[in-house]
Image 1 (cartoon, rainbow, N blue to C red):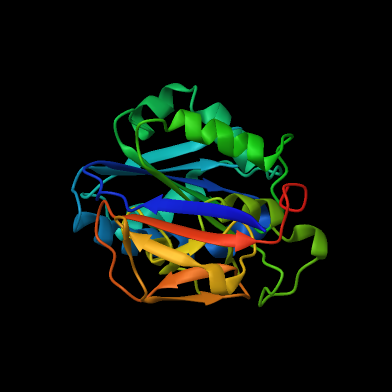
Image 2 (spheres, helix red, strand yellow):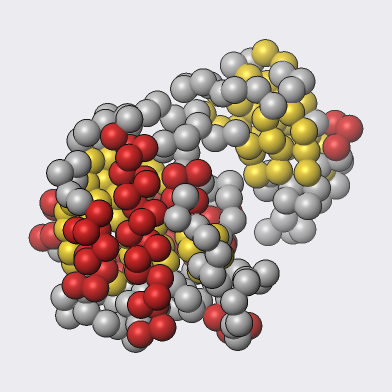
Length: 268
């Protein structure tokens, strides 16, 4: 058996927050723009309970044409948010990760992504992400880019159990891979996900689960909260996730130790 220890540190509520939505603006996406805007309006309401120093911006997934709209803040209306995606140029490329990477070097990014502000990145597309590099490489870059601040990622795409008709090549496996790094899964673009922008972000809600990197021997799991053993939790094998039955607090250090039969090669 191999012993594994994983942990999370519950974030402090951000004093400043920048939200950037990276949107596939191909023709098939038009029906999703209003739902995105409604979701961002709900998110804005929750953010206002934390801070009034926030910005919401939009870019398209190819960084071509009119690729940027924003920023929007507490004074912006729902109409402003609904119109915003339609002001972006249509693009035929679904390179959302590459688009964000290139955007951070533009003049607009100096306004949309302030160096001191925590970040929430939202990716939305009805096709697979197609940037020319591995998701792990992008995640490593994103960690370096946000060094010293908190950041979260939400991905909305076609899932394997999508409620809409789809081709297997359109499933957002790469979006799901990125979401997994943040202890979550991709959100089905064909479902009602307007409230999911709030529910799935640990920047506005404390994290009430740990998505394990390896399959545990369940009887060996030990969970501690600030170095004290905590027994109010349960494990679901279907998602390989431990869920908390206690209310976490800001700054809590929650660790999980367990044995696994996986070796290094098995776990990648």
